[in-house]
Image 1: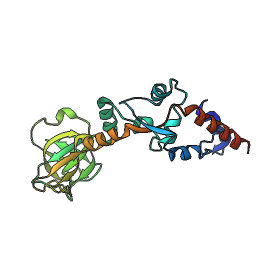
Image 2: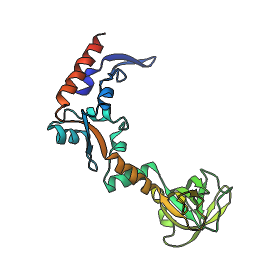
Image 3: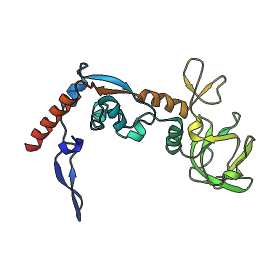
Image 4: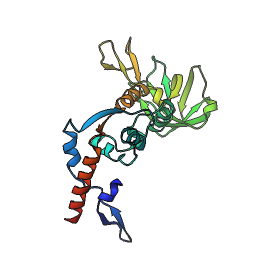
Length: 243
């Protein structure tokens, strides 16, 4: 049974000149909420990196038809690209979009507090190299949308200047923003500024990888119950459509 066939169609007014008949996805049944609380109906499945919902359904039930039951039992899955585990290349691609640009990591004896203006152009040796899109004084880096990567030195210190503020800072190196620290921890696990002695950096990639690994464990209906559960769902949805 196609999942959305169970939902009623209604007229939706997009604007004064545009009305369309669409599926009312807010019209739902509580049956799956009850199932989710009944441990005898479900088990857990470890999804593989880049595995799609239809592939999971095929693996569990020998058919792709029950893919729609998975996000109902796992309310955290609202976007399959974002909310299911990814292979390393796809995770890196996802993070490069989520955390755009490059992090210009400053020397630990420098401070960007009170310096630079977001959206101003940045220069190296008089050459415009990009736009400042974020600044993080306690993390010790500028987030830059680089337009001329060839003008950014590699494995060497350099000075970057704001074309509007005329502020300058010495940069140690640059990395993709998702490889930059999201926080620094001291020996007791407390978040501290980057210039604190003996800190351990935790990158966005490290945090996102832990989250991605946790996404692999999903709740699914046991194969022996899937037919009866979905039929009950269909009956209840059909009844509600008639009311």
